[in-house]
Image (cartoon, rainbow, N blue to C red; front, side):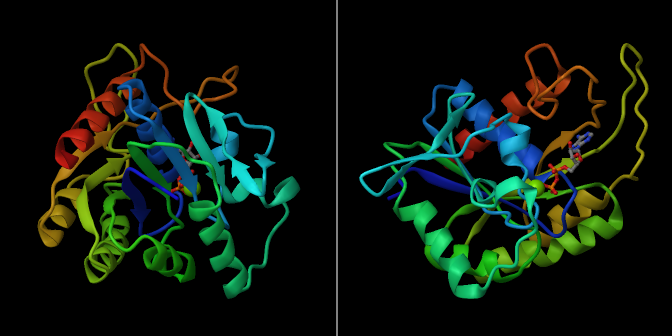
Length: 245
Ligand SMILES: Nc1ncnc2c1ncn2[C@@H]1O[C@H](COP(=O)(O)OP(=O)(O)O)[C@@H](O)[C@H]1O
Ligand SMILES: [Mg+2]
């Protein structure tokens, strides 16, 4: 069984940074001393194993699954089931079973937080997860682009329909700031997320800048101490923890 507070990270569409936000939020909560699980339910776009540099799947013990640990976070991912990056065709019941297994047949131990990387949009998986986890706190990820925030609005409205609470909006890829320069370039526009927050009656809780991955970094999506994004995620984890208290 799952203990702890569930934070689902949702978005209207793929590619806006949902997995990046999920992974870094989970790692930042862990740094605060919390016991944290990260569940990646994004079947078609599962990317947590590669982001967290995980090359092996989970082990099992007495018919129970032992989650994989990385950065001190306990992880289960749809990517562990899909081998070799093969494309998958999931049928409804099978999918529901896997989701149920991740929640009920994994030895999670005592948890403070469960961060869930949800599939984008409002499809089948989202509905299955809603059924098994009826009330969670949700973080809505969007880019500042007006089209992205328009699509995100649908995901936000679904959260309300399902009695989830929207913790806030995380705007990702907000701006680019060249190193050591005091200029910000708003490459994807500005203002979409503030409007979205007003429409959904929630707050914009973070604006994450665009980063440029280094070529020799094997884990470029997990931000290290000394980077601006490391500090931004530390702040986000504090905001999340305070609003759950
Ligand atoms: N703030 C950012 N700056 C630059 N690239 C980013 C940022 N956030 C995410 N990315 C990159 O954009 C791509 C999509 O991000 P990802 O977290 O996988 O999105 P999603 O899970 O919503 O599909 C990835 O290659 C990721 O490394
Ligand atoms: Mg993803």
